[in-house]
Length: 172
Ligand code: FEO
Image (cartoon, rainbow, N blue to C red; front, side, top):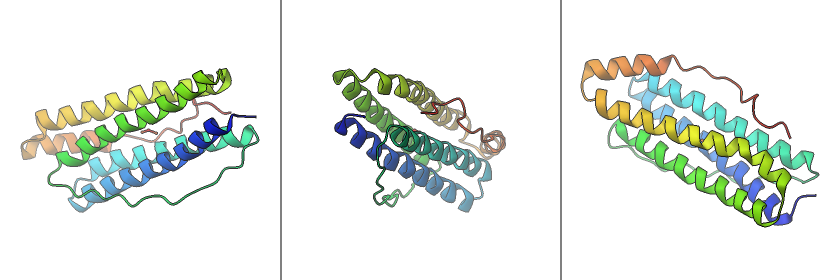
Protein backbone atom coordinates (compact mmCIF):
# COMPACT_ATOMS: atom_id res chain seq x y z
CA UNK A 1 0.00 0.00 0.00
CA UNK A 2 1.29 3.45 -0.86
CA UNK A 3 1.77 6.14 1.74
CA UNK A 4 -1.31 8.42 1.68
CA UNK A 5 0.63 11.60 0.98
CA UNK A 6 2.36 10.02 -2.01
CA UNK A 7 -0.92 8.55 -3.28
CA UNK A 8 -2.57 11.98 -2.98
CA UNK A 9 0.27 13.69 -4.82
CA UNK A 10 0.08 11.17 -7.66
CA UNK A 11 -3.70 11.52 -7.75
CA UNK A 12 -3.29 15.31 -8.06
CA UNK A 13 -0.70 14.79 -10.76
CA UNK A 14 -3.28 12.96 -12.88
CA UNK A 15 -5.31 16.17 -12.88
CA UNK A 16 -2.22 18.23 -13.73
CA UNK A 17 -1.39 15.99 -16.69
CA UNK A 18 -4.97 16.20 -17.98
CA UNK A 19 -4.80 19.96 -17.55
CA UNK A 20 -1.58 19.91 -19.59
CA UNK A 21 -3.46 18.11 -22.37
CA UNK A 22 -6.25 20.69 -22.15
CA UNK A 23 -3.73 23.55 -22.20
CA UNK A 24 -1.93 22.19 -25.25
CA UNK A 25 -5.19 21.61 -27.07
CA UNK A 26 -5.98 25.24 -26.33
CA UNK A 27 -2.67 26.18 -27.97
CA UNK A 28 -3.59 23.94 -30.91
CA UNK A 29 -6.96 25.70 -31.20
CA UNK A 30 -5.19 29.04 -31.34
CA UNK A 31 -2.75 27.98 -34.06
CA UNK A 32 -5.46 26.23 -36.07
CA UNK A 33 -7.49 29.43 -35.96
CA UNK A 34 -4.45 31.35 -37.19
CA UNK A 35 -3.98 28.94 -40.11
CA UNK A 36 -0.80 27.40 -38.68
CA UNK A 37 -1.82 23.76 -38.89
CA UNK A 38 1.72 22.46 -38.32
CA UNK A 39 1.96 24.21 -34.98
CA UNK A 40 -1.54 22.97 -34.16
CA UNK A 41 -0.47 19.42 -35.02
CA UNK A 42 2.58 19.66 -32.77
CA UNK A 43 0.43 20.58 -29.80
CA UNK A 44 -2.23 18.00 -30.62
CA UNK A 45 0.45 15.31 -30.46
CA UNK A 46 1.73 16.83 -27.22
CA UNK A 47 -1.77 16.72 -25.74
CA UNK A 48 -2.05 13.02 -26.54
CA UNK A 49 1.24 12.36 -24.77
CA UNK A 50 -0.06 14.22 -21.73
CA UNK A 51 -3.11 11.95 -21.68
CA UNK A 52 -0.72 8.98 -21.72
CA UNK A 53 1.06 10.40 -18.69
CA UNK A 54 -2.25 10.75 -16.86
CA UNK A 55 -3.18 7.16 -17.72
CA UNK A 56 0.16 5.83 -16.48
CA UNK A 57 -0.22 7.58 -13.15
CA UNK A 58 -3.81 6.37 -12.83
CA UNK A 59 -2.75 2.81 -13.59
CA UNK A 60 0.03 2.98 -10.99
CA UNK A 61 -2.46 3.95 -8.29
CA UNK A 62 -4.94 1.27 -9.32
CA UNK A 63 -2.23 -1.37 -9.44
CA UNK A 64 -1.32 -0.40 -5.89
CA UNK A 65 -4.86 -0.70 -4.59
CA UNK A 66 -5.57 3.04 -4.45
CA UNK A 67 -8.97 4.43 -5.41
CA UNK A 68 -8.50 7.22 -7.95
CA UNK A 69 -10.62 10.34 -7.51
CA UNK A 70 -11.01 13.03 -10.14
CA UNK A 71 -11.49 16.74 -9.68
CA UNK A 72 -12.36 19.50 -12.16
CA UNK A 73 -9.88 20.41 -14.86
CA UNK A 74 -9.24 24.14 -14.94
CA UNK A 75 -10.04 26.17 -18.02
CA UNK A 76 -6.88 27.36 -19.77
CA UNK A 77 -6.85 31.11 -19.36
CA UNK A 78 -4.15 32.10 -21.78
CA UNK A 79 -4.61 34.78 -24.36
CA UNK A 80 -1.79 35.17 -26.82
CA UNK A 81 -0.22 38.39 -28.01
CA UNK A 82 1.76 36.74 -30.82
CA UNK A 83 2.79 33.36 -32.26
CA UNK A 84 5.67 33.07 -29.79
CA UNK A 85 3.46 33.37 -26.72
CA UNK A 86 2.11 29.78 -26.57
CA UNK A 87 5.63 28.44 -27.10
CA UNK A 88 6.93 30.50 -24.19
CA UNK A 89 3.95 29.49 -22.03
CA UNK A 90 4.49 25.84 -22.99
CA UNK A 91 8.13 25.98 -21.97
CA UNK A 92 7.25 27.56 -18.62
CA UNK A 93 4.49 25.02 -18.10
CA UNK A 94 6.90 22.12 -18.60
CA UNK A 95 9.26 23.64 -16.04
CA UNK A 96 6.33 23.78 -13.64
CA UNK A 97 5.42 20.13 -14.32
CA UNK A 98 9.03 19.15 -13.70
CA UNK A 99 8.82 20.83 -10.29
CA UNK A 100 5.67 18.81 -9.51
CA UNK A 101 7.22 15.49 -10.51
CA UNK A 102 10.34 16.36 -8.55
CA UNK A 103 8.24 17.10 -5.46
CA UNK A 104 6.60 13.67 -5.66
CA UNK A 105 9.98 12.07 -6.15
CA UNK A 106 11.32 13.94 -3.14
CA UNK A 107 8.43 12.72 -1.00
CA UNK A 108 9.01 9.14 -2.16
CA UNK A 109 12.67 9.52 -1.23
CA UNK A 110 11.74 10.84 2.22
CA UNK A 111 9.40 7.89 2.74
CA UNK A 112 11.99 5.40 1.44
CA UNK A 113 9.38 4.37 -1.15
CA UNK A 114 11.83 2.90 -3.65
CA UNK A 115 9.10 1.39 -5.78
CA UNK A 116 7.53 4.78 -6.45
CA UNK A 117 10.96 6.31 -7.05
CA UNK A 118 11.61 3.66 -9.67
CA UNK A 119 8.20 4.28 -11.22
CA UNK A 120 8.89 8.02 -11.33
CA UNK A 121 12.31 7.60 -12.97
CA UNK A 122 10.55 7.43 -16.33
CA UNK A 123 8.77 10.72 -15.63
CA UNK A 124 11.97 12.43 -14.51
CA UNK A 125 13.61 11.49 -17.80
CA UNK A 126 10.51 12.42 -19.77
CA UNK A 127 10.40 15.87 -18.18
CA UNK A 128 13.99 16.47 -19.19
CA UNK A 129 13.03 15.68 -22.78
CA UNK A 130 9.86 17.74 -22.66
CA UNK A 131 11.67 20.80 -21.38
CA UNK A 132 14.33 20.40 -24.07
CA UNK A 133 11.72 20.03 -26.81
CA UNK A 134 9.77 23.06 -25.63
CA UNK A 135 12.91 25.18 -25.37
CA UNK A 136 14.16 24.11 -28.81
CA UNK A 137 10.83 24.93 -30.37
CA UNK A 138 10.88 28.38 -28.82
CA UNK A 139 14.46 28.95 -29.95
CA UNK A 140 13.69 27.87 -33.53
CA UNK A 141 10.71 30.19 -33.62
CA UNK A 142 12.81 33.12 -32.44
CA UNK A 143 15.52 32.34 -34.99
CA UNK A 144 13.46 31.49 -38.06
CA UNK A 145 9.85 32.45 -37.42
CA UNK A 146 10.31 36.18 -37.90
CA UNK A 147 9.44 36.25 -41.60
CA UNK A 148 6.76 34.56 -43.68
CA UNK A 149 9.15 32.16 -45.42
CA UNK A 150 10.73 30.99 -42.17
CA UNK A 151 7.35 30.64 -40.50
CA UNK A 152 6.07 28.60 -43.43
CA UNK A 153 9.06 26.24 -43.25
CA UNK A 154 8.75 25.81 -39.50
CA UNK A 155 5.03 25.15 -39.82
CA UNK A 156 5.82 22.43 -42.38
CA UNK A 157 8.38 20.87 -40.05
CA UNK A 158 5.96 20.78 -37.12
CA UNK A 159 3.25 19.23 -39.31
CA UNK A 160 5.45 16.14 -39.56
CA UNK A 161 5.33 15.30 -35.87
CA UNK A 162 3.50 12.04 -35.26
CA UNK A 163 2.07 10.53 -32.11
CA UNK A 164 3.76 7.52 -30.59
CA UNK A 165 2.05 5.99 -27.54
CA UNK A 166 4.22 6.20 -24.44
CA UNK A 167 4.49 2.39 -24.46
CA UNK A 168 8.01 2.51 -23.15
CA UNK A 169 6.73 4.13 -20.00
CA UNK A 170 6.13 2.29 -16.77
CA UNK A 171 3.23 -0.15 -16.85
CA UNK A 172 2.74 -0.23 -13.10
FE1 FEO B 1 3.36 15.27 -18.77
FE2 FEO B 1 4.48 17.60 -20.47
O1 FEO B 1 4.47 16.71 -18.87
